[in-house]
Image 1: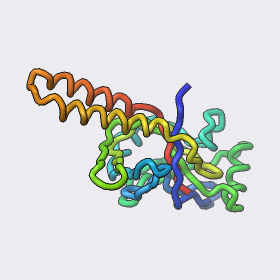
Image 2 (image 1 turned 90 degrees about the vertical axis):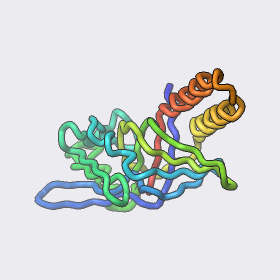
Image 3 (image 1 turned 135 degrees about the horizontal axis):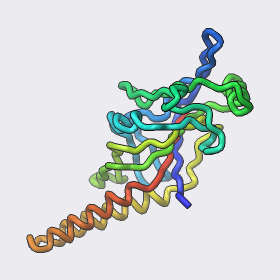
Image 4 (image 1 turned 60 degrees about the horizontal axis):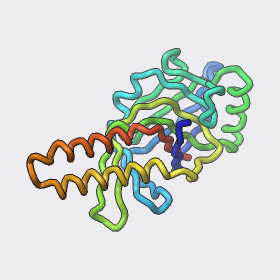
Length: 204
């Protein structure tokens, strides 16, 4: 079973209605916005991280529940774009139980957050300061969600990725013999592979 990390922030989702079409709009991620991940590290998402991913087939869900689909890029009911601020989201809310309930809850302010589920394809770690800084440069995007509140209960995958990076760096520093270089590169590849674990970040 895939473990999912969740992240929280300050920006969320709002309703817009025009010509009998109901659309939820918001940002699922904000670029270069530092997030403290449980005191373990600072994380930020670099501009362009979603550039390739938003061309794929992405779903819009309620609370990351695959059984509660409210939009999809392939059908045109979910529209994703990168702007100077972050990952912008527009979802045409369906006339279904989930869609109608969600619309009401967002209007009331009971649901005010957005999240996204993704796999990291390229990231970098910097440990020159007091706390490690993780910069995510490229992701594979699976879904965006409207959420009641983001959770912070699972940082294990990221901690594991940080340890992989440390191990790879240590191997690079210790193997000064040119003949040992392939071993260092293998350790680095192992770290990158580790970054493909599915994660979720949230904003509200």
